[in-house]
Length: 76
Length: 76
Image 1: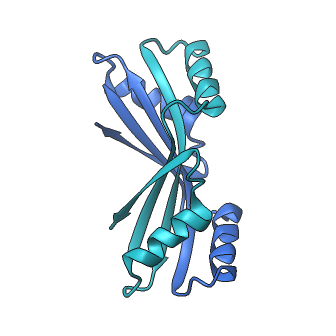
Image 2 (image 1 turned 30 degrees about the vertical axis):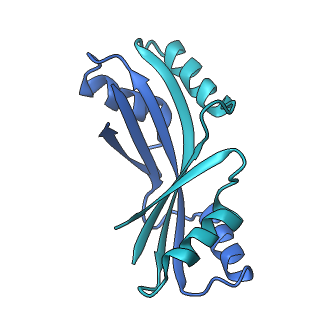
Image 3 (image 1 turned 30 degrees about the horizontal axis):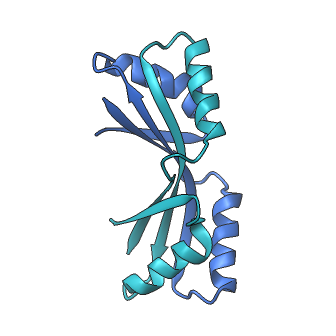
């Protein structure tokens, strides 16, 4: 089973990487960009019998820092 | 208009971050993980009249290194 896990900063958490991208896009002449947030995408191939609880535990224990980040799991 | 841009390493490109995650999941006792690839997710708020060519240019010039990375744009 293929998993795609999206890890994004919670709203309100400062995102220096996103700001740097925003600034760089402006410098390159791209207008109309309002806001940029940078996150992570983790693609995983796991055994088909991996249950939701295990996937959730992976996210909470390793992949996301739930103090400042949200995560979303998509099965492909 | 909200954009979500997924930047992933091309197949065959070495992914040390993915390997580190894979190894760490094993150390934490999660079995059945076969492969892990780490990528980037960039969420952007852009003007509604931003055309595809501009979005493509942003990706090619700044967001992705097309030598080693693929990108995919999703409009939300």
